Every structure is written in structure tokens, then in C-alpha cells.
Image (cartoon, rainbow, N blue to C red; front, side, top):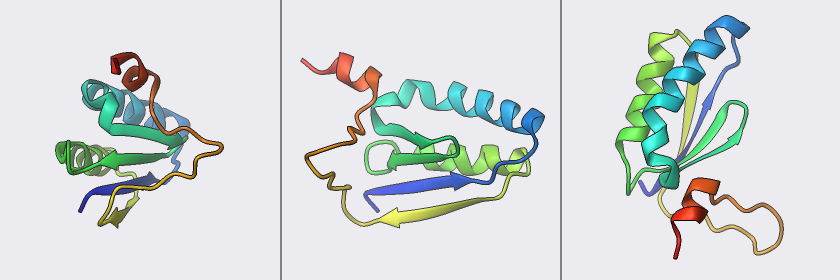
Length: 95
């Protein structure tokens, strides 16, 4: 598995806030391999940082938030126009 999309259900606001704080704490060091695509959806580079998927699953189970995973055998191929999935942190790390 090269990459995966992780999606979490949106629970009540208090639980969601705790979940997001836990996620940010764990994923921040891996900003170049993780892209948050929406409020509750992340694209993960599992080949470079496999622990990110495990952390998201573990955190969602801890907070009792249902989630789903879509695995991809190859890296995503983004169309040249439109959305740029590279995070701000990753851009600043590029030469």
C-alpha cells in the first residue's frame, strides 16, 4: 500500500475537538506525508510514514469515532490544474 485516505465520522463538537487535538499532536511531525483534505478526511503517504495510519485508527478508536480507510496501491496522481495537495509545511521544506 502506497497511500490511503482516512475518513472519520463527525461526532459531537466536544469529542471532535479532543480527537483533532490528539491527531494534530501526533501528525504534526509528519506534515510532509499527511494532507488534510477536508474537515474529517486525510490523505496519508503510508509508504513513507506508515505510523500515521496506525495513529489515526488508534486515536479514532480511543475517542469512539467511527472511521474508514481507502487504500491505494500507487501514489495519487493529481491533475495539473486546480488543487495542490502539498501542505504549507512541505512547501517550506522544499529547496
